[in-house]
Length: 576
Image 1: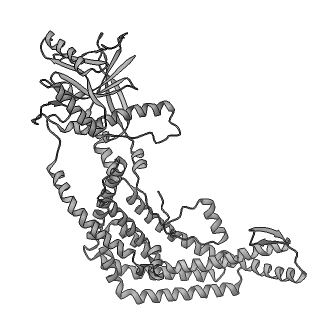
Image 2: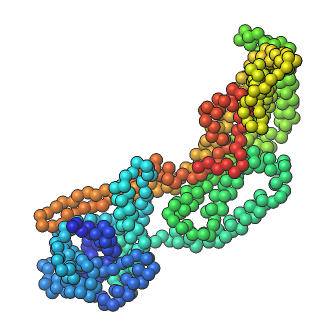
Image 3: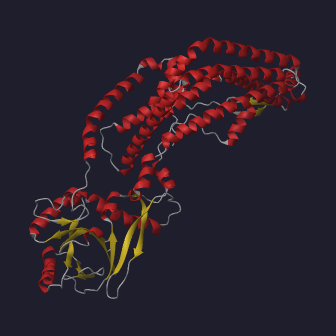
């Protein structure tokens, strides 16, 4: 049977002593965690290991002995190390010895309490203790493709990673401590610490308390009954700026919470949200500084009115073209003139409204630019809402045309059922047979003829304004795609994958080291990091999209039947 010994590479130069770690009987493996040096008292070692086991819930014990003789091996030390097996009584007792500066170690096992001791083949696996402790092993993402064998290997690796990660308290003792036990591990030369990190930890407590108080105050205002009345509740649910502010408010509540993260996933989520907020605010401040330099706000306000006038003129030319003979088509002149003048009157009202607001546009843009300090996503959402307000007349044209077209389509379909002796049963939601008299058939034929001959004129107006509306929706959709990208991108995880790839482990690989006859097989365990695509897929943050995810089939069906395409989502519709 093969015995696998996972030995930390940081202990290869440790002085002679005993090996402490965890024995995994299911895998016939030993995970070495540290080396206890001479001199020591066995009772104190047992008491220390019992305390570690109580805190970490890991069955840490003495697994064997370690001999590092830079000169010729002494017989007395060898006999003493063998006698330690009777004191700590672990089965099997692992003996690892290193002679001088040789890379080839001797490794053997003793089974004193076994009736039929068998010589086991030993594989010595070196691992970087620091990287294994700080890394987080991720299960396979594609569970449907992964086999039972791969799942079993993943569970074996998880047991090794969990053993090292849960033994963190064991690595908090360094050689400068005055305790009775001296250990060698990855932090034995001194516990890693940073003055800046410690100061930030101390300052984060009052900052989080203050932020929590402010957020609770803002949340109370948002939940007040004043905002639940019709005009304010309608605006809050429809404007993407309000949705984005509510989304960021939830993010602030998550990172300012005093509850400790229960697992690695929650910790990474908090870190990703915090970095996303920092990057968002930094980009917003850069945008704000760019806007307020060289009077760009004034130039933008001066450009906005001519652009609105130009769009209105183009719409007027388009309506004049539709009121004639567009593309040589023969239209119903009476209906064509009524629809054309109706829409021209709306454009006239819109131009008057824009010129009435022109003295205040620069001031409005100046105050809107200040909102960029809340983040680039808030500024982009405000831009989307401004586009929606500036193209409100196009939306009105689209609604009028769609409602008129939809009325005629449903009227024609109902009259077509009348010709076939059918009718729509509203209660049972199905088509039933029905008998009609002569007067009903005559009126139905008359109405069907009128609607059929008026349909091309209505359909042309509907088609033109639907294309204009889709153009506006596409522009707003691109803006919201950028907002969703900033909101959902796990920036902290990507930076961690770039700088410290071992922190996000997908698995391990083993490299065979130089071998020598009569010596155990030596392997070097290296961590395979997650791919960037897997990092984004695993740690992607949930977003609140302002557009429903319609399929192409349902979208084409809505366009053909004249159903309205709303750019807003229903409240509470969360998309991951």
